[in-house]
Length: 613
Image (cartoon, rainbow, N blue to C red; front, side, top):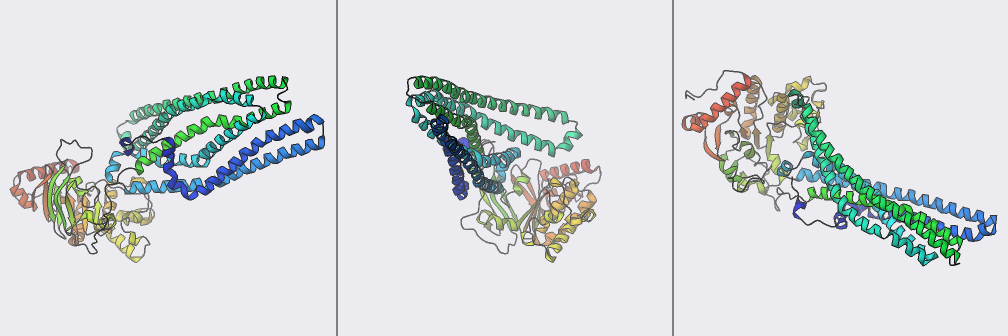
């Protein structure tokens, strides 16, 4: 897995976090108000030692109980006002931080939807899931809590340190000089903790991927008795993450050690200096009491810096990880001035089309090495070839799941890259061999490609019923709630054949001008496949269809057959023509027959028009 950030210089922490500004801008006033409330609360806390100084010098020394009561009341009022400001701080920041989280999460999901399939080929789903959930949630907590308290506590320390000089310069200098090494400790902490935070979050993403793979592959693991193997692998990954988290904890413990130790040393030295100053009459008892009260108030802000600094670095790492996705280049986008095809006829053509995957070695030839193929409107073209010849890759080009690296693909003479993606994908429908369904009702899955029918109604019902009939998906009537039954995750509660029929129904319901079928009937039995093929012939009368054939029976469905060999179309013709003229085609058909016999345990053979294979 690579990222765009690997090619860029690493930003400073502040510049990296500043990238969140567009998301935080709408709620910035409330975040500022929250910070202001926290600052006022800190200033109120710092004012209490000043009141204590007055109390010690006045009513406590003189024994004036009336003034003592008023002094105690003043401290109480300051404490209550501080508590009110703390409550206001939380009230100001909680709602805005969740708004930022919502905007970030929806923007991230939208970005995932827009990025090309090539991006999803490279990235682990667990890594994307951890960014979507954990990293964005961390940023919400940091905006609501971390950034506000970090800024306020630093200002509190600055103001409090300045006030320490109010009583005697020697006390202030002693306190600051002893605490100065904390800056060096903070620098060392950033250099070690930052890399550990990134490593930890990446390992958490890998762990999420392992869980997802195990859950989706649970049937395979159980069937082969490999649950123990999966557990060992997961345990190793979890142990690696544990060790990283322990390293993070040690780094945090190290900074906490200095944050607690140095202020305590400073207090002890200041106490000694204060006693000496008091003996020489340069400092009163009241001033010494007030000084240590102020130092006590400063203790929590100073101790919290370690935690808040680690929180800052975690947030920075989360921001980096999120922007790795935002910064990914989207190579499949709408043209600046899209062409429109209000009534597409369905003439599909590949003109010198080349394609290679991004991670392919430069010395390798293109997977598709100059494809020239024309499908007439309403024609059904079967695409055959040996395994690895590029059939599935070819089917992804008309809908621009991938873009050609050279040449072009046209629809009614228009380069598909000149059409908007939205329009193109209303004209081109697809059904894949690996049928993917969603945790929605049967109705919603089948009508997924018909946004115009989202509101329901008689037309939606008619389209739904026709699509289910073509796909021979009458089994849905036996489900608990019929077409309104919510199927399980990825449709795993259904059989493979049932999932494929619903996926085929979805493609049919879209009523595209061009229908691309990547062996969508592979999981069906021979009898059901024949029924589906008969129904498809009725649909394909007005639809241009490109179908990847892995069965001889599927080839028989086509008007013409295209033979894909070594990345090129080596022959095009009817099934019988190619059987007579192409030795490689006969070899491919023979391979398909052998595979079908092994799958169905049948000795039946597809007619070869009298040619000995």
